[in-house]
Image 1 (cartoon, rainbow, N blue to C red):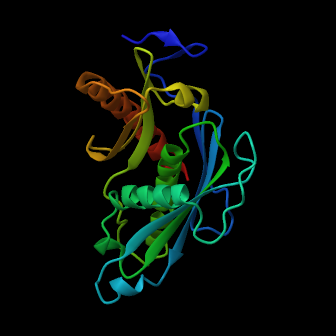
Image 2: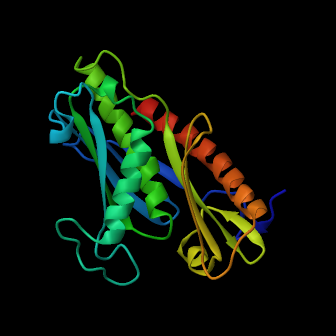
Image 3: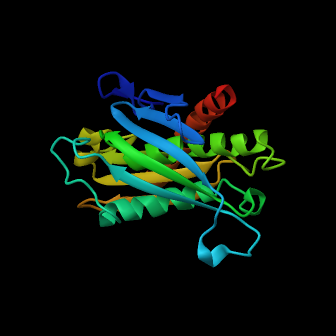
Amino acid sequence: MSVLNRVGRELDELRAVTIETGIAAHAEGSALIAFGDTRVWCTATVDERVPPWLEGGNRGWVTAEYSMLPRSTHTRNTRERAAGSGRSQEISRLIGRSLRAGVNLRGLGQRQIIVDCDVLQADGGTRTAAITGGFVALALACGGLVRQKALTASPIVSPVAAVSAGVIGSEVRLDLDYREDSSAAVDCNVVMNARGELIEVQCSAEGRTYSRTQLDRMVDLAAAGVARLIELQRAVIESG
């Protein structure tokens, strides 16, 4: 049973989530995703080349880049240049790994898709929003390749989405906003596919340890949240 908290939002309840597609006129796939007040602009670019180390390998690649605009946060961040901060590089790699888990890379052919995730406004959960919105942009780009007859079938094998969970006091909560994340004793980001399989779990204790029971509860809450996010992804991809 869930308990009311957070101005009426229950412990197992996602923030209001919206996904708008077709927001970038020149990108092969694009989506603007909002998790509450967090907003991430996601675009997918089809590149007919593959990285040098994949040449002749008869398979494609999916990679990602993540960045935050200077005033996406409460105080101004220094604008990221070139490779970006260590945090942004780590999140970029996470998004890339997560999206590749949903794609048959051999089915993509000798090309790569680059997914750019730019945080317009941050209120917690930017990396999970980027993964969820980034998958929509990726799937739309793959659908475009099929319509153009560059591919005979979409290489997408399963939708991928992500959500956060955490421990605040004695409560395990889903989809933390910035205020909750700042006070959480444990912060957990969970990436899963439509089959309910885990792709990545990042759980960190902030000042105190947590129990196996709490970990299981966080993953269970995240699994239910991911299932709802994948329903939304499928709906917007079909209409996009």
